Image (tube, rainbow, N blue to C red; front, side, top):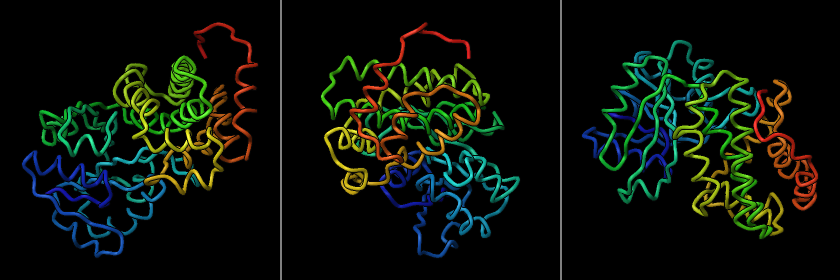
Length: 301
């Protein structure tokens, strides 16, 4: 039995995957009794990143400590600066947490369209077993033991997708979006290296793969939010137009703070933070980015 905490689009998509992989599935939604998840062999957390702590506080008292928690949220907790697996450890010390991430839209998964993602956990053998147990021919799950790297890719790509959406909203063209995606990936890798992620993880599904998808598709809430900003909408109006939670809008503030704390140069993240959290005009931030000296393409910091 697989429990799904969260009955939104992504929760339903992962429930579809689990059922087709041969597992019985039980859903839990906020407001219901957490006893619905009792007896499950694993629980997938399919809730927004900023809600993970609250949901864990509700459901974990009724779960066995041996039950794996599979986190599908992509973000960093604003109040603490913790990544999702660290939030799990903070709320439920010793819990067996894994992180599911990669280039995937719920609508594509529900249609059975080919998708590949990665499951990361500290215990390589167990993580590989769960990856195999939940995989389908159309939903391939690779395994990794680089939890931090997988989390960084999933969280940062949402912020960078906002930047690409803003660029397209300002009608700056395909070349500008390609440049933003590439330079954004450079920022992501600098950030990841400083925080201990492995380079090969960042060039994999949860890093480069998810970045390419999210920075180029209107299906992405983050990209669509950024595009609305680029077209002149206020932050409040752009959020109101969204079909769901815009994870990058919550993540950018803490990503900016962590970049400053760790001394990582992230000009695109700085620009998105200024627009989303500081009320800056997109055209002003674009002008500042274009005024930066080009310098060497590859850096060692």
